[in-house]
Image (cartoon, rainbow, N blue to C red; front, side, top):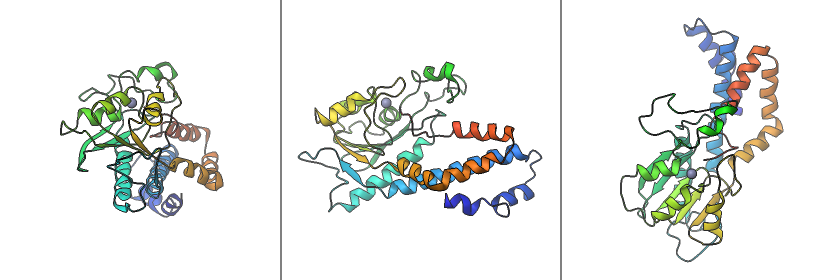
Length: 274
Ligand SMILES: [Zn+2]
């Protein structure tokens, strides 16, 4: 949030934008919208930076582990894991889902990147062809899920080599019950998560299979990452968010509505997953 405070001053970027750009509609509504987008961008950058400081923890350590970002002696693979999870987070920004972005990167057993994916509608789908649904569109919220192709599925479908047995998947969320068998089927043995492993159902999506495959069947070696989002929330609790709320409160009712809308449609969200 220091980034936001540093760059977002009336005599800084904001003032220049207002004074030097030919924007006839640069009124308070626009100012609020731009400020909220700018703040979200700063938070997103901070979240990625904070995430890169994290370490990965294996849920089980079994026999041969071809990719092991936790091992004390293995700084290179730890850095690779950080880098590839950061790449997955950037891919997640390309989502078609206004609520939840998910990104995935696959490397083969030679540690070459062979597949990239994010959750989205089928290629060449026209905008508006499928229901996207923001948080507020309760009526169509669940209707998008049958059409969205998950990040892991996209990375698998669009991979550039057929044989990825022994490869590793880096993904920003826990694989769901649809994706888990597909990941197992192609022979991926190692999964590195950008979060803690999740097994609870979220909305219409179940997550129990992956946890079973990891903890009971030992079909995957799974590394989970300390949640960067939880640190962001801690940081918010210590004063960052109240400052933003205070700013919002000082604007008119209409500005508040714009700010609230911008916040509700911020992505990726940390409270859901595909
Ligand atoms: Zn999935």
